[in-house]
Image 1 (spheres, rainbow, N blue to C red):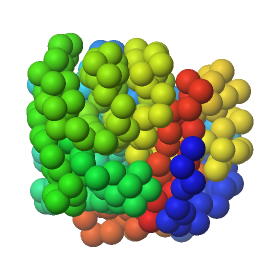
Image 2: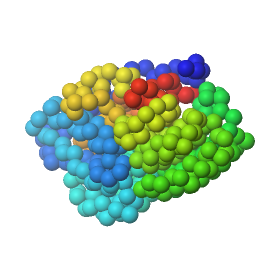
Image 3: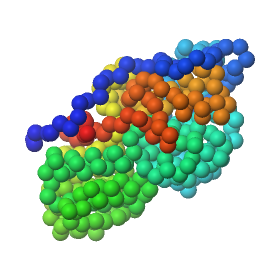
Image 4: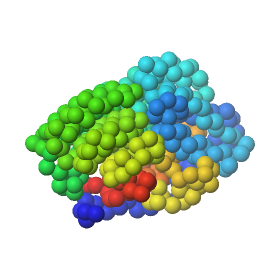
Length: 376
């Protein structure tokens, strides 16, 4: 196995954070007169092709709420879910449903970039604050939505890191780039195309729910590419890499965070071995207390963006604990929030982007997705 160049020091393991740590003042939600039937919403796919990614986040948010309720037994908060199926066409109606429930004080999500683009204008108009744990298209924070916040680095950090890894670690000479035509996948792939322009020997775009990638496979094999980058989600990636291997392609398959899910391995089987997956997300073992609590609650280790979902929910819970329960008060609280989370020291800039960003490279090895290194 090729020895790997280290681009940065690993993130220090964060202690499991009690809701409200690092915030200022305020009365507790269990104090007299404060509403005790408030809700935090989760907005993302719980069914459909990308459901695993949504469920990961929902469980992280759910754990935060459970821990909060244990400490505020006489003034509990509810996590309510809005299942988008990852479909931007369903997002506006779901967003309207969320804003019509006046007990919902904040949204963990939307989970995906396409549905974020469709739903966030509605949340912004209603003044309902959103913190996405996973939507990475850079343009989302540039739309002037005052209610938009992001818990992770966007594709303007992930894609250059992926390109750097392909060039400096994989030492690829020829790279083929494909995307799934989605807001997320194309945005990610386009930055890789730009950063590796002199090395790109072919391009293609496919569609979500596509199952026959023979045209793409033919282009990849004809290009003699020794690496391929795919911007998209795990359902299509699994079929694509399987068909590539069946046609004898020996190069390294590289993809972004939308492919970092066990569903990729289950569907691709042995064809997934050796794939490199980039993600602006923390390896579970870097937050052992959170990992233990999550596994005790759900019977498995936290997966992609579980910790980011947990951190996002905890910011809203901290607002409730501080007595900030109106949309305007919650928005003001989140804008000025500063506290240690599981994934990072949480603080947002004027555009809602996180002040701390890390990107990790993961590898499919022995049928598992394992962290390799942090990419600077």
